[in-house]
Length: 142
Figure (tube, rainbow, N blue to C red):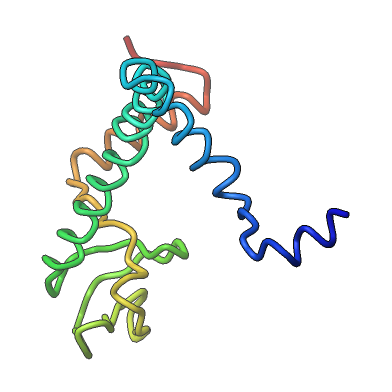
């Protein structure tokens, strides 16, 4: 009999209608105050997701886009593949030429650049090497 009813009634609710829309409509019919009270947990969950997941991701994307837009020749960068290099030229709006060793230049997509490498001063580099030597021998200076 269900087969005949489906032919006679061409409207069959979809999964979304039957699971999401119909309960919302039925809840609204019960009373405006009660329907809003039932939606409050969903609104709170969405707010938590927005502030903990969506907003930080948007900030990170904006920061990365600003960094990619402000690249210039001579910047030391790290690609998403882990290649360290210095920007020597811009071939196109989306292609950057990196020098990874003397006489070795590669072309990479601008979007493949993950971050700028912070300039390391000579004093900071030598202090880091001394600290590493002290830890390796088990001696630390205090």
